[in-house]
Length: 237
Image (cartoon, rainbow, N blue to C red; front, side, top):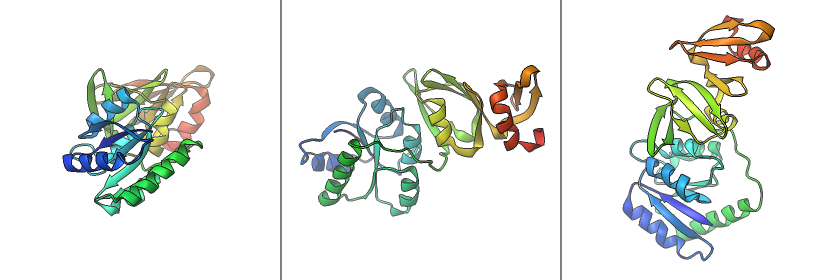
């Protein structure tokens, strides 16, 4: 089992590294100091598990968990604050460990991880994140979800169009939409829009349409998805 440790505090990282040495079937493949490093190391090292601190400077652990590339590693939150527990299990992380982590409690988490590796893990609907961390061309972009205009599928990637740019995220469109929640709706097999950005729907021939956004962008809407969009935006019906 390949493990990545993510924590902004060096002593916490060192303690986890030391505790994990007791497990002969666990290999620590790296340590990250923040969310940006975490995403870069997940992409390059492809760990099976991320031991992830929740409260860190910049992007927190919840945003990191929502931004992991697919297929995403299993996540175990490690934090000094128990008030994140409800959000953690809404995301369906594998476990939630409180600092200082006790060896016996870590052992139970490792057992649970081994059990999950032998059975498929269902990705649950999670509370929509407030931001995404997108690693593109060696740079990590922190994108506020409220600023996203629309999403464009590109094979197993998604172009995230927002006010300041359009970085490429290593996610499927379906997977990203599941994480972003009800604020977004699919308009085409290769596109989706932020409902808050829609200003007009222009009908075309054969049931197709064009979605006009606040910034002037035009996004294709196929007949297959038009009814669902109108149901979410009855003022445009």
